[in-house]
Amino acid sequence: LAIALFFGACHGQQHDWAALSKKMFDAADLNHDGSVTKLEMVQQHFNYDYNGDGKVSRHEYTEEICRTTPELYGLSHYLYDMFDLNHDHHIDITDYDQYFAKMDTNGDGVADLTEYGTAGHQAYLDYAAGGQHHQI
Image (cartoon, rainbow, N blue to C red; front, side, top):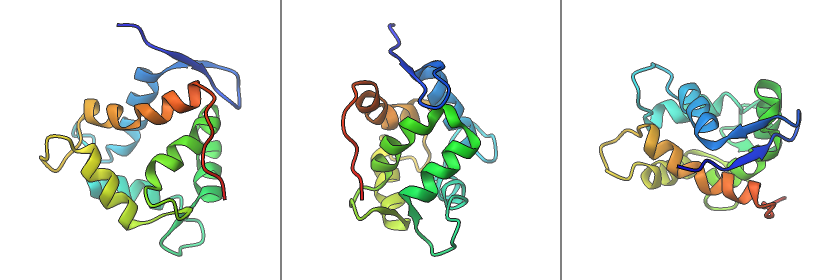
């Protein structure tokens, strides 16, 4: 299995998608049971809602990523686009409902590491290929 590599935007470090996906999965798996529920995903991402308006702006999201994992800053724009399914420049509960339904491919109400990693893989590929992300 060949793993594609990309360079982190803030530190120029090299990372592979499997390791990044596992790191993000572990951060989202708040109760450490080996799966991510929609509630866990919402709880984690609404920590990014600095102004408390119930929506996560691109600025809030990318600032939190840069603060917590600066090597993912460049990828964070693509991850934001992945979550902002209705392209209204805010991530809110509607986006999470739609994203989780898409991610939970077997419909069991939880996402395992494979489902989680597969769902984010296109954002990674877009970033690695130098594609454009949506901007305000």
